[in-house]
Structure formats: C-alpha cells, structure tokens
Length: 151
Image (cartoon, rainbow, N blue to C red):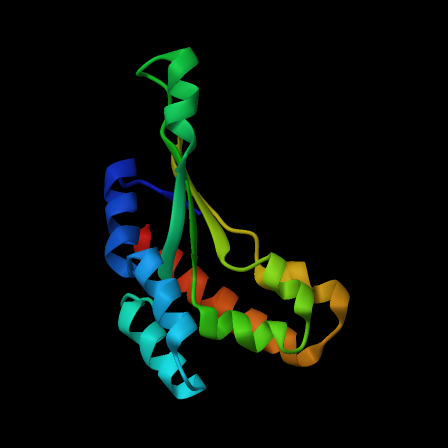
C-alpha cells in the first residue's frame, strides 16, 4: 500500500493502533500465568485497539543515514502481533511460530510512504493445514485493515 501521508503520520498511526507493553514485564506475566484464562487476561491487557502489540522495531533508515546523510529516506520495520493468534496457528502448524509476530515495513519513496506486509497465508499455504490457513487468513485481514487505516 502507498500512503500520501507523511512518514511521521503513518508511524504515529501505527503507534496509536498497537499496544506497547514493557516486554520484560509481559514475559514475566506470561510465565507466571497459572491458566490459559490468566494468559488471555495478560495479553488482552496489553494489545492496542487493533488487537496487536508491538514486540520491537528496527530503524533501518538510521543505519542508511550513516552513509547517505540526513536526506536518506526513512525506513522502519515493526514486529507486531498477538500471542493468542500465534497459538491458534502453531497448534496446527508448528512452523507458523517462525513467522509470528508479523513484519510491517514502512518506508519513504518518491511516490509516497509504502507499507509492506507478507501475508501469513502465503507463509502457511505450503503446509496445507486448513485450520491454520483459516487463522492466517483472519490475521491477514486484520493486518490489512490496520494498514488501510494508516493510509
């Protein structure tokens, strides 16, 4: 997707849509949860309005800037997701754990700010598991809705 908005506005929109838990606290709370219901409460408390949380981000533009200077286009990679959605896929296809959380790349180009996302369905299609694909398609729909809202 390509947005006519500024890079800063697109990033701010993503930041507003996803939760930003303290990861050390989150992992502690997950490990001390006694039941799955307790785990669900922990996760639901930290996701944002989109149903996702940010796990980490990488500022690729900052690296490029060191060689090319301040006029370097901005580029950031965000890892976002929801452990409860990941669980639903991994139950059926363990390899799904290597694709979650998902990556969203936001980068500046001459024609606008690009938002890139490789669909979970494309990652899991080769495993041929209909249950995992159903969850993947639902996840893709949620991510695509989020990206559309940022444009």
